Image (tube, rainbow, N blue to C red; front, side, top):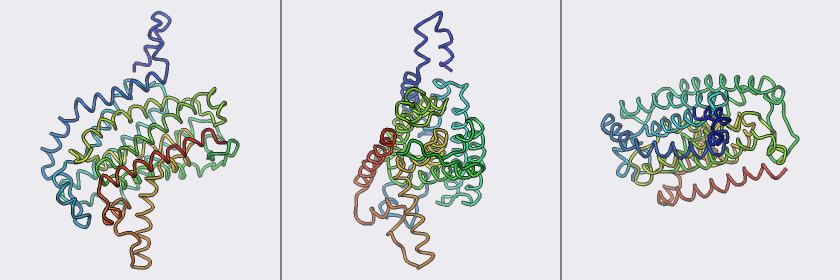
Amino acid sequence: MLYFLSQLGNEFPVLNVFRYITFRTAGATMTALFFVFMFGPAIIATLRLKQGKGQPIRADGPPSHLITKAGTPTMGGLMILSGLVVSTLLWANLGSVYVWIVLGVTLAFGLVGLYDDYLKVTRQSHKGFSGRARLSIEFVVAAVACFFLAQTGTEPFSTSLTVPFFKDVLLNLSWFFIPFAAIVIVGAGNAVNLTDGLDGLAIVPVMIAAASFGFIAYLSGNAVFAEYLQIHFVAGTGELAVVCGALLGAGLGFLWFNAPPAAIFMGDTGSLALGGLLGAIAVATKHEIVLAIVGGLFVLEAASVIIQVASFKLTGKRVFKMAPIHHHFEHLGWKEPQIVIRFWIISVMLALIGLSSLKIR
């Protein structure tokens, strides 16, 4: 919205500052942070009143959770999404199709998560609605988004997969691009969802990934920087840096309330939405494989669940004491802050590796 003030730059030169993505990204970060700080306490109070017993705690989980986390309200993703959407609408160029596609995926995944959280709270069960139905809805949303992303770019590049660390390698997936990209988005959403199990565990790696992809989006959408770094130029994606900035600010605000001991949980409302957002941005900027590196912690969490389930079904034995893997470390005797902070460190290291792909080619 504020971007259109730049059109008055000829009459009021000071307004030219709104042309710059860097300025608007900083503005989006601060606006989202301020929004969550201002309205967060009221949202938490309302959710606590409406939910009563709060998020149901798994009986088969770590015993300490039944004591320390009982009664904590969920659906905290509403705080993040409200700050994210308001800030994005205020600071982003609303003429960008990429902004609307990413916001569409984010809100659709958020609604799926919200319904799942609603069922869990009202039934006081950790089981929401059918996993098959949930995945089906997510795949339809992701496939539609990927179709429009493919139409926005120019073929064959728009349907190709780029390979990090190689400047000239392009794999043209043709029609298979849409299902492949949909898997990336759905996989990212559910991987973040599985990571959200300890206070602050998911939101900080999400912010690290958002900062990384904000940087990637800015460089990929700038012809000069893209040519200098020899990465693939994707016109228009620079505007997604503003979205990432809004997520970073909203995430910081949420972390204030989610830090141990958490006053509110993100819930599926937030984790599915934020994972879907990261997946959509990775597809838009043609850095799908880099997402698997930067978001390697999410991949590890999802892989631990897949391995656990497959092992138990095939052999009747479990590889981990409990999945996702952060619960495995809890059963080994690690304290919650140890796990969370060490996983944050891993996320930073993986982000640096992913960002190095921009230069090492």
